[in-house]
Amino acid sequence: MLLLVLVLGLPVASVSAGLAAHASTLRIAQAQSAQRHQVPARVTSAPGAAPGSAANEKQAVRVTWTGKDGRQRTGTAQVPLAVTVGSSVRIWVDRAGSVQDPPLSASNATATGWLTGGLTAVGVYTCYVTGRMGVRRALNRRRYAQWDAEWELVEPLWSARSHG
Picture 1: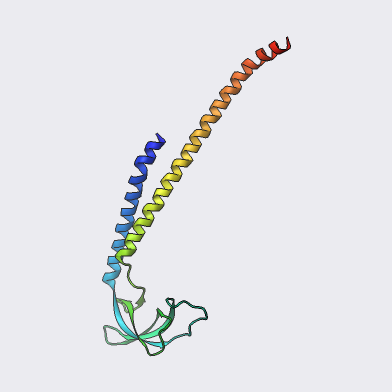
Picture 2 (picture 1 turned 180 degrees about the vertical axis):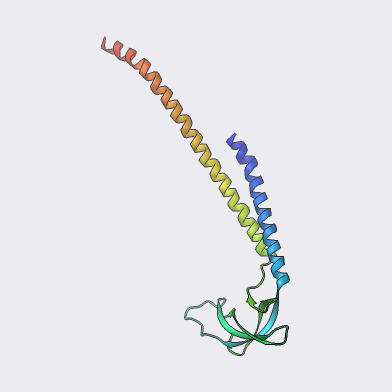
């Protein structure tokens, strides 16, 4: 019975959870893509790179850009360490003109789906192993109790023969 749960439940649960997570993350990515857009900005202040920093790391810097309304805006954005004051960068902003992270991508949704499906498979397998161990332990306790009860009946007969 438990094996049937594993054989049928693991793929169904994993695929269902993975597809649901993928669809949910994809909807979030689409919503973010609809609400955010890139604009050119100029770096106005940049802290120096920390010693030992990797080339692909980012730093928070102050940037200025022109909003859709034509007004000059200022904010903080994450840019590569190599960027210097006065450099031009592209940043993501929302409809209100606030700096945002880039929207999630379809590959983020795919990765989320695979991760969720994989973790669900591990969870189902863990439940199977735990259930199997629990059933085995319960059956062993029952069997040992039966053996003890039978021994209580048989042991006096055997010990009387050996002494008698």
